[in-house]
Amino acid sequence: MIRFLSIRHLAVIEALDLSLGDGLTVLTGETGAGKSVLVEGIGLLLGGRASADMVRTGAAVASVQAIIATPGGAEVIVRREVSAEGRSRAFIDDVLVTAGTMRERVSGWVDLHGQHEHQTLQLPETHLDLLDRVAGLAEPRAAVARAHGAWVAARDALAATQMDARERSARIDLLSFQLSEIDRVQPLDDEDEQLAATRLVLSNADRLQRLGREAYEALYEGEHSALQSLAVVWKRVDELAHLDPAAQAYASQRDGLKAQLDDLAFFLRQYVSGIDASPERLQEVEDRLAALERLKRKYGPSLADVRTRQRTLGEQLAALQQPEGQLSALQAAADEAAATYLSQARELSAARQTAAGPFTAHLRRELADLAMPHADVSFRFQAATGEGEWLVTGIDRAELLLSANPGEAPRPLARVASGGELSRVMLAVKVLDAPEATERTLIFDEVDAGIGGRVADAVGARLRALSGRAQVLCVTHLPQVAAYADAHIHIAKQVVAGRTQTTATHLHGDARVEEIARMMAGDTSAPMLEGARTLLHAKTVEAKVLPGRKAKGESEAAAKGESETAAASRRGRGRGA
Image (cartoon, rainbow, N blue to C red; front, side, top):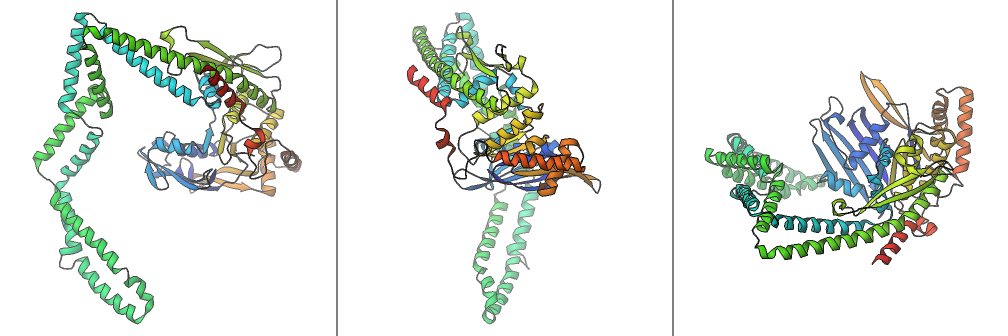
């Protein structure tokens, strides 16, 4: 769970610090106040794309930092920095990591649902991913992906040997030429980056030698060197320590500090003598970089890609040079790889179809809680008809169908669902997709878009119930949703000294009543304030009896038992084994 969030110099946010608690927290405010910027900042901690446009005008760096309490009870500090040039750095507990590593770690604790994410439900290709994720089919799906890769490699090796003699000879010549180009250079991973750093040093060798020499003389060898001056300082401090124990703590640090300064002096002396300032060495580096750049332009874009291409060319050339007698062996290998893939893909397909029933049953119950009592959802599966349709995800095409009204046949979501219905389907899916474990943060940016009235009340109640087993943050414009919150944060912007700044304020008591009134009717007249108080009181009473709101420490898994969807998928895999 996110316990503390700090943002600096991000778009309209100059400085913002938020302490966050358990339960449901809503963020409200006028359109354009900076609510989505705050959510975008959290997205950076999830490995989101960083760009120079995010940095506040005039600032050198934008940063987002959070303290996250993990399910194991530990606290982790994560930070993302974006420079005005568009470069970004990620840190976990002050250790530099890649954005991908940060995404992998933080996504296990925080789940962000953006403003327009529900529109991805209109893409049928995402539905199979959703079913596999909720049904716990990651392992068999990965096995199918590996089998698909093995089949593609065996198929390509076979195809390479089935060329006629003239085509094979021409292909061998081409591959040999391309492979020799790379072999002559023999690039290493990241060699270009290392050489670029070396070139920078060699290009500035004279200056580096001068700086190192001057620093060494000032520290060690000069007439008035720092170490000589410090000897006088330490002598005086020793005399002080004999007379006053208060100085003893500083006197005892002498040996440690002297050792560090001696190390620095030794480094500077070695550094100056170790710089190769010869023009010949610089020319060698320039020539090597030029050769690597030619390879990257032709076989890149990176040296890692060049080395991958080198291995691929070698494998293809070896396959073409195989004796004709090995054709039957390659054919057998391709047939075996195809059979393995098809077997595992069919087993995965059976598990998916078994899991689809419990999944859609759960989804219907969630939609009923979201004021869609007559909604009917189902999966439509279509199997591949031949090898040309075999995919890394298996032999299935799957699409989620919806009927929102009684008497209407289920149809593809993209054709029948309104914006408000899509928002509710996405919320229901997120409820199913969220892990059963507590101490996780779920963030919804305007999940209530396109709805209102009784439906908005149902969404608020569902978010409140969901917050019984996870920390929930929700950006909303609806008073019915905001009234269910355990904590209410108001996001506002103001102009200070000619600059727009966004602020965040925790609302309590009358301040919260005024914000609810503003959300209800745009004013804070006496009747509106009374209506807001009535709404807050009613939702507070309702929230106490909502299902899903568990006492602290009570296990959600114990209350609900094992997920039916995951259990059904395992039963399907057992029958297919």
